[in-house]
Image (cartoon, rainbow, N blue to C red):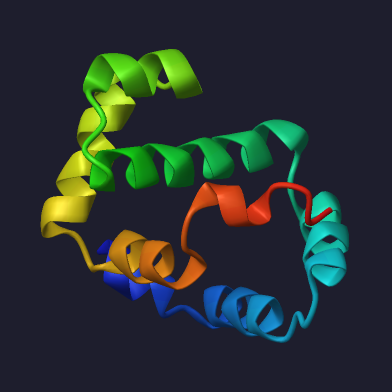
Length: 105
């Protein structure tokens, strides 16, 4: 089964619908705290930060030092940004810079 087919399964659609129903950062924190382990959340967060740094032109070395991501992970994320479905680009354009989240609880 291809990834796109897997993403269109009923239970995955239910998850996406649940995420879209969240209205506040607090609701997101509560939901993801229940849904994911801390390591899963750290992994998701790391991937997003790696994508942001790639978009901003940071070097692999800087990304590894800042995020702790492996060069393999960085390459995979870069490939997705360059030829993937556009998800990283979409979300990075919407959320803006990391600095806008500092101090917002």
